[in-house]
Length: 280
Ligand code: NAD
Image (cartoon, rainbow, N blue to C red):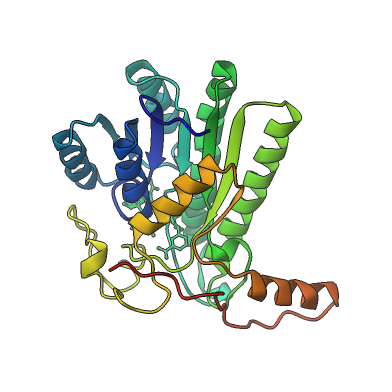
């Protein structure tokens, strides 16, 4: 897919961070945007911003793990804007802690949001995209954690490796049908967003922090959400499946060699091939 103007984009987790940057970027490309987030106040701010620039944004406030709410949203979105040409299943949450410290309810929340949120987006929109049968694209947000298991990250790693598996299967299923629908897995490295706010005891606000004011701004390897959106749109145009914000081919090839040799897992801190160009 390389034509975006006057097309429709759906973005989940659009109230903050990477999702917000993707929504803004889609609007700048001339797309009509349906923006999903559980924080209505964040969507209001985004809607005001996009409409001030002459864009169209349809806000929808619900939990992406709620299949019924997602289905009702899909009906409203297709009626109001049309079947999406670009689908970003991006909403996600982070929790850290040793593997045995999360109770079942915490596991269920994490699996529901990070995995079933993606599944719901695929289930309600891909059949419609198939029916429409015009060039379109699905981007699911994974993580470096889709490829690497770090200590303290069992929940997040479990969900992001699942998202990788779902996304690869989706790409293979659509290719088997010769559908004109591209698929990508976005694997961000560190990005200046609000995803760690909960962990740091920062209360969710309707006004989200801009990247330049983020406490990690200027730290090596941290990228801005706007830079991530650039990588994503370039990757969609180039029909790339793997969207790495931070190239780490050397690290991956070293780890793969250890796996093929049958070595036991031993975490080595992820290193990137080059420092991310922080544009703050
Ligand atoms: P963020 O917290 O800044 O934004 C995520 C948005 O999603 C928030 O506005 C939040 O309200 C919304 N959201 C969360 N759960 C939801 C739910 N159940 N229903 C609806 N909306 C919900 O975080 P971000 O960093 O922009 O994260 C976006 C995606 O990128 C996530 O999937 C995350 O795992 C992934 N990611 C982020 C990083 C990073 O360094 N920031 C790195 C790798 C992957």
